[in-house]
Image (cartoon, rainbow, N blue to C red; front, side):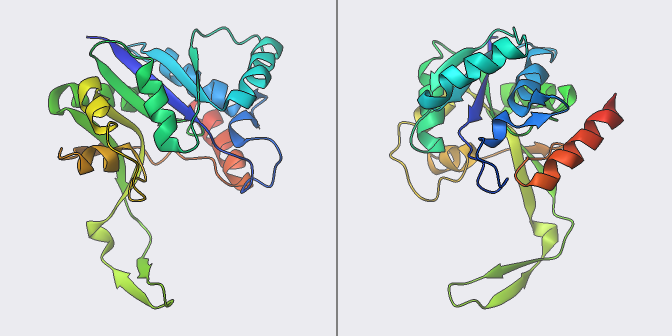
Length: 224
């Protein structure tokens, strides 16, 4: 069986209050994106790595790799206007069958155990989507601003990796884009496949805000 990981790195620095795209911000002296690629490169199944990156950032990424002496083998693919198009571009670079994990570039703390669990579960069920139970109280809000309490026992916080048999994901991405497509699971579900959720990891945080970098640094040191 062949294994692949598509690392989607299309984020900006807007919520990080930074002009630098957040995947390039430093975490313990090294760009976040390098930590993410290393996590998959060092995992048990050692998937082939495809990095989907805005075409205008390719040269900058090349310069960062030289500056940090980053030599992990990966293929850089042009990103699209939306995440949907970026994943689709990544898929085009995969020939034949296999299992592919789609992962956010700014989730650098993904564990080897979760990566392995994702690949093996997708091999069995066709897909595997990481998720954790909600711990906070949650409310929905409508267009008029009215809120309503929801039962958190019925809610899951979805993470990446989201892992699929290549042929299932390829078929799903033949659909036209819809606003309801918020992640790969929603694309696959809309194409008619049930989604299988596996246990994620609370330390598998997505770096979105400045304080997330500090939290990630603490968690990395804890894991050493």
